[in-house]
Length: 112
Image (cartoon, rainbow, N blue to C red):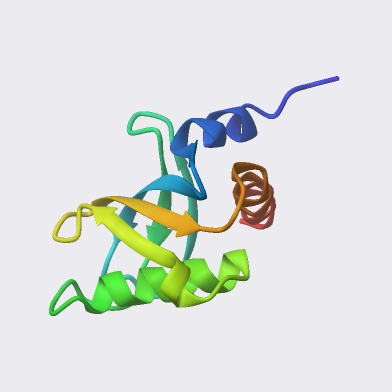
């Protein structure tokens, strides 16, 4: 059985904490479309393209919105805990397991 190396690496971007799961992202604001961009093995993070521009929190708001949609949680459960003014971000999602987050990310990877 062959192991999909992309899926193995996705695990490196996700960390479980008490009552939450944290995921590292690299976003590309001002893109032609919003979507999952795969895994960046050098930065050990998930790449996401965002249509919004990085001004007045627009790109951050869109990231929170798309993550909430993908994970099936309310936007109030998604919080950018570091990198609010940077393309590299750590995002905490309350009330969702690491296993569920990985399941969703792996499905998005397969569809990309």
